Length: 177
Image 1 (tube, helix red, strand yellow):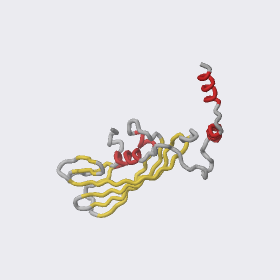
Image 2: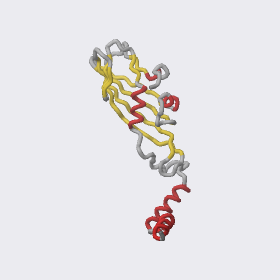
Image 3: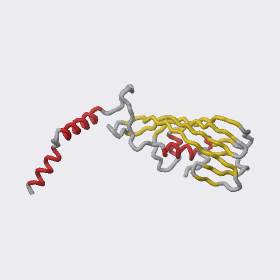
Image 4: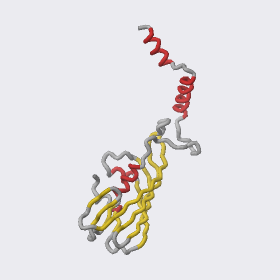
């Protein structure tokens, strides 16, 4: 768990916050993700926009995060900036004892700040795709490794034709024993 003092710029002041709507914008960069141990995001550049609505007994947070994550492409292994966009919602309710549940945070009325760093981090991590590819054909310069893609296409074509030298050799070895 990161030290929240280092992530102090992700605190929303609650003391003196009047009822109504407000917007907060935070930048999530490499330094942000480095604060979290074993982060799956090593390189990233995101903008997190939080629309906060304070009511007398609760605070609603609508979170919208857009940006990109640096990662190897799962198709061709080239380094890419994978574009990502995610939305989430969080409710903060006042209670006698502070606690956290799924999508609901309970805070006491004397809480002065709400640090959203952990929630923004979790939002990004929960929305990471399992397969890291995207339609990059329109990008200039084209990021994909054409040699790898040609090799994959060639192997796929060999499989369609029923001939694969590796499998042919294994079949030959198996039949001769």
